[in-house]
Each structure stands twice: as C-alpha cells, then as structure tokens.
Image (cartoon, rainbow, N blue to C red):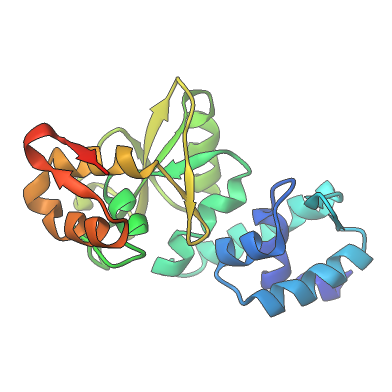
Amino acid sequence: MTKFMDPTAAKIVLAAQRGDSIHRIATKIGVSYSWVYDWIDRLDDADIISNTDAGIQVVDHEMRQQYAEMMAALYRREAISRSSTYVIPHFAGMEFAYTEIDAAYVWTHGGYQVARDHDDYPVFIAVHDRDVERWIAFFERFGIETTINERPDASDVDGAVHYVLFPKTDGIDAAWVDGNPVIPLDDAVEQLLENRPAYEPALEIIADEHDMDIDASHHGTQR
C-alpha cells in the first residue's frame, strides 16, 4: 500500500465528503480534474474510497487516519502557502464557511484582498459552536494557531497563517464558490457594507459580477 502514500491521494481522501463529485473534490484541493479522476480510479480499485452514482465516499477510515497524520507532518515542516491555506480546512471533516475578509476574497474569486500580507495571513471561518474545540485541536496538528471571534495582533501568533473561528449556534448556511464554502452572497454583502470604505473595491466587483444594485444607505442589497 506504500504506493498510495502520495500527497494527492491523501488530499483526495481527506477532502472527500459523502456524495462529493470528482469535480468538487478537484476544486477543493486545487488539482486538475483529470489527475483527480485518475487517482480516484486507483483509490476505488484499492477499496480506499467508493465511487458510486451517488458520489464519492471514504470506506477505509484507517487509511484516512494515516493520510491525516502524513499530511499534518508534511505541512508542519514548512511555511504554509496561500493555496494550501484554503485546502487544509477541507481535511477536518467538519462543516464550515468562509466569512468576513474571506467572504470578500471568495466571492470576488480571489480578486480582492485587504489588511493581509505574507507575514500576517489570518483566515476567517464560521464553524459550529459545538465543533470549536475539535477545530482548535485539528489546526494544532498542523502547527497552526487559532483565535475565536477576533483577529489577533500578528506579534501574538507564530507563523504567518492562522485561523479566526466564528462559532455559530444556529447553523451554517453556505454557498459553494470555486470549491470553497462561503457565507451566502447577501450575508457577505451585508458584512462588507458595515465597513464599506475598506471593502468598496470588493463591493464594486460583486455588484458587477453578480448584477447587484448595492444600496449603502440601507446597508442591504437590491436585485
């Protein structure tokens, strides 16, 4: 089975949720569809996953755990890239959605960044309140720090990448954009309007791409 101890195979198995399509998995991990398709064929033949008409599901959970340990060890050895920053949360097996700055980042297809750089790159995700401790433990395995509800000062965290968790007790609504779960567009726009001067370029991109008439005076959106 050592031939299956491959980072791409690991990413596929870790990111796969029951019912995912090959395309969704490919976009989650940022790997070409053809390469993911080839690996899924091999993983299916090895009974690590099952590729059915209802989608992909993991069947060998012991192998999944081995993949989790392998990827955590690999990521701990070097600085995490921006692309990996948006792949790692998919490995947790828990529901989440990008919010705040990352709602703008995802809904503009990476076209807008604000108040982040290579030395200080917080990532903002909404999570279920019941999962907070599991998220903290998950990121610790990758050597990544987390805070709750508030962005820390860069000098207070180790490493450039860190995650800011926003616990939710009333469920998480998410849309899928470019392989990433993100808060719904109307909710994202409402957040951006609360700090419109910082997000004006993002609002312009969203208004243009999604044909939205954004009314600042009402802090809402009209279609």
